Image 1 (tube, rainbow, N blue to C red):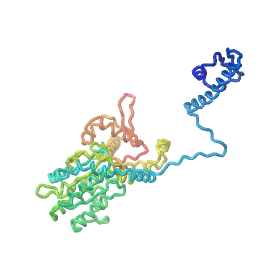
Image 2 (image 1 turned 45 degrees about the horizontal axis):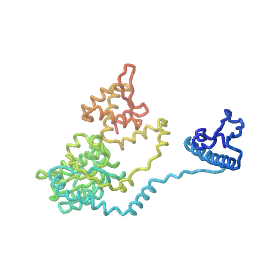
Image 3 (image 1 turned 45 degrees about the vertical axis):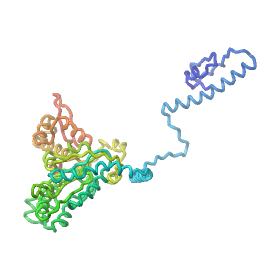
Image 4 (image 1 turned 135 degrees about the vertical axis):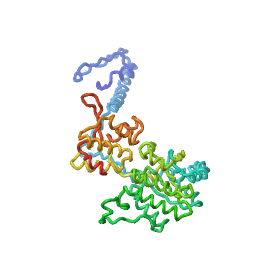
Length: 422
């Protein structure tokens, strides 16, 4: 019997061994077993059988406790163990293959018939100056596409893939101008002219998107008699996740009114449950006037996931976290392009307060009052959630001073003026 085996094993499994003594020292030779049975042949056979079974059980128990202790198998000399992590494209391809093999599309189509019965109601809501927003579990691409086919009998339909990271809303507005306004919309300002020096170039600046959208919307309303339905798949997608794009889309519907109804009508889908809190300001929400529709499709997010950028593993991110190089400030500022508009405005508000006070930090109460004054946040919980997300991106921090007052600050590695100029 191997004496490295657990004592409780011998106590529980080897009941037929009457007396077993355990050596105190591992190097001490174990004494022979004292089996108090007769010297008959039957007794000898029984002892040998029990000892053999105990030895076998001892090996099994040793293996069991090795696994419980988390022992890793030893690599032999020259052996190499490689862990192959599939790429994002390979994972998506595998999921698509499994989805095709399951043959569940017909069941999904049957399940979505309940939403198609509501298309007429949704269309009426859009005619009364409301925008339709679909939310729920599963990809809503098929429902939105079917709704677009239903709307094609009432007007023109344009589809926009918000989950595409390469989407350019400025180019989309140009196409709208060419297709529906005969190119008579806003023209590009010469960057070398005196007007460009004193004004924002409409075509080249994000800040001019809303003005450009307003001009195109008014021109469309004056020239067209049929409404235009803009279908946006994932309005919270990476390509549209900034305040300029959201404001421009909302401006399209508010500035295209004709006889009391908007000529450009918006219907979109959203997957981020926090979109209402972080994506739109109160002014933009008022422009959209969303009619929220619960649409659970339970379909896999195949097309949406294809547009996601490839990211490093969490272990690499944690390893690099806090170990920033001199050029890290520029990399951190690029994160602003992927933040929700409200997060960016809170960060810009903190940068303005730090510059105005010429200090390295601002008290939390001052930041909270400033955000509520600008209608960026409506509660203390909402502001703290935003601060937590910014802290996760290493773009903001908070700590208590010697007097116990909570202070918020932007790390010194990030230029404050660059945040304000973004």
